[in-house]
Amino acid sequence: MASISRTQQTTQSGATTVGRSVEPSQPADVQNAVAPAIREHDANDSHVTLVKVLRMAETQVAAAPKQAVPPINTWILPVAAAWFIPGLGHFLLKKTGRGALLFASIALMFLFGLFMRGMMFTPEKGADYLTSLINYGGFVCDIASGAFYLCAAIFGYSQPDMPGDVHDYGTKFLVTAGLLNILAMVDVFEIAAKRRD
Image 1 (cartoon, rainbow, N blue to C red):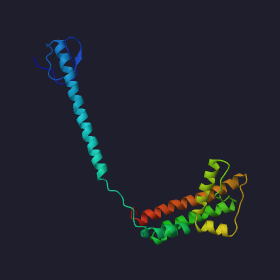
Image 2: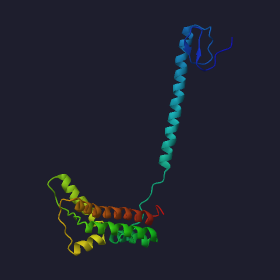
Image 3: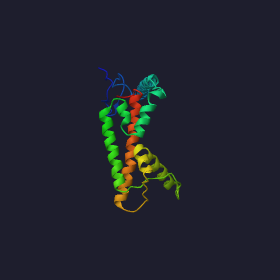
Image 4: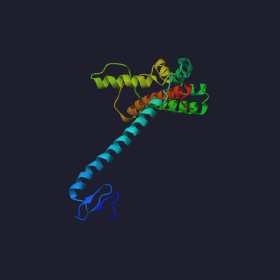
């Protein structure tokens, strides 16, 4: 009688078995003895395959080149220029279109913040930890606007914190202008370091 191939088949007794060539006329105890060995062999094959995949992944990760920190003289001047005058770092790197767009965007946001009488943050300790974090974080964002912030401070712009939607939006515009310039400085660093075009 032809043997049953390695697929699920129904035996004469109605039970299903999975295995190698098993004669349907063999006793049930023989079939039960063969099945665990087959399952163990399949499990070993799966384990070996998994180990191979993990070793290949480890090899690829280990072979990935690490980016070295570029010399400071290649990026310090463009980054400093990008902080002082938004967009100037891109102009120095011959990215005039991007530099002009950043300068216009940051300048307009900062001016809108001034027109709306937004508040400039000062680095002072607040009543609780969260207030102190907001004050110091807001100050960093304000000063990141570079020459815009310095001009406003020199000419005596000082707006106290007041309730009101317009005033609140003005404060957010001032902070957002600084945040955008921080992103511009990061972009200048990556371009100067030859990490992107």
